[in-house]
Length: 533
Image (cartoon, rainbow, N blue to C red):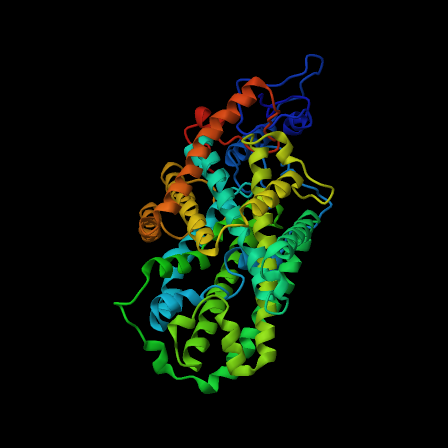
């Protein structure tokens, strides 16, 4: 690395960028000077330009956001297909909606486990304990490091590449496990109309065909996936609006207050809340594909948070208040029965169709996040270089194929096992995210943060305490089987990273770090605070 700030040939930083160097911190002791070029006359104006250039270099060290793109000196944008349309606010809102929710399908177990009152209170209070802190951290860190890889980059910047890899492994595996659920649920909603899909070879072939079709949509581009999410989202939400309008005259508020604290399945209750209100950080792995993430990401997270909370609370309010509550009936798919009671068969079919479409939306959104995460890790040299290759549509082809393969391999698991296992792995990943967030606030308090949570260092620590306690509760309530399987997965990640480094050292497989990305670690050795503006 050499500094071109004072290059007398007038090319300065651009000269080194054209040469392929990624310069992050000015180094005045190693000037670049052509031996056959006569230096230009030095003026006060030149001094001012040099100071401004040096200040700019220091300010964007280790990934400061400049308002237009995540750049190193020379303003080279992230590697992407520039002719492809980036994701705007509305598609991003619905991508987040499907990463987190997809509608109230699956919340029925909260009523079955704890009754109407605790279910309603849970979906009002839980977002403030978990969803709001996670969304705020995602907004701050996602705009601080707006590149594909998301939370992997955050943890790498704070705790080092080894723990960054562990974060990537646990979050990717958690996402793939989660995605294995959606083709199965899609067919479960259709088997009442097509009984052959209930089991056997037809069901296996249907899972395979559905996975292939949805995987192809991801291959064709993130813009297509984003607008598909918008269409599916509107279709999924509308029937619950209609059900609410039909059910309002039949509401009896006294039904909302039913509770029996001696008959609560706390494990099922907490896992249902947690599963339906997490994954806000998943959108960070697509930050490199977002149009102006400095403004777009925080805005989309806010709109999506409102949409998700209302999308859960309003149907629960109608469902528990408009008909007598029988907790034994409140299991997956019960909203379609409520729709038939309130509006007739036509509304039931609409709800079932919306549920099937919602599972499609959640599948494509989750696969996009998982595959772009692998691409971001490859660009950081954590995975072999071939994971960073893009298709002609700008999508991470190898990442998509790996994620689809994982979905097919895990599709045999039961619903309860999938939810519990993914929650367990997700909790470990979130612990690393909280540590990275707090550490960067302590170590680099003056670093540029295009969006900054309006709390100080103490406030940042306090904000992470309630969700951390919740993580402890979820882990403590997990079954022995889930604990053993999940810990085995964690151990695989701990071993895999050194093995990959050995493969890289032996040059059996090619690894590379994108020259367009800032160095997250080397600058720490050369600067007391490389993130400071």
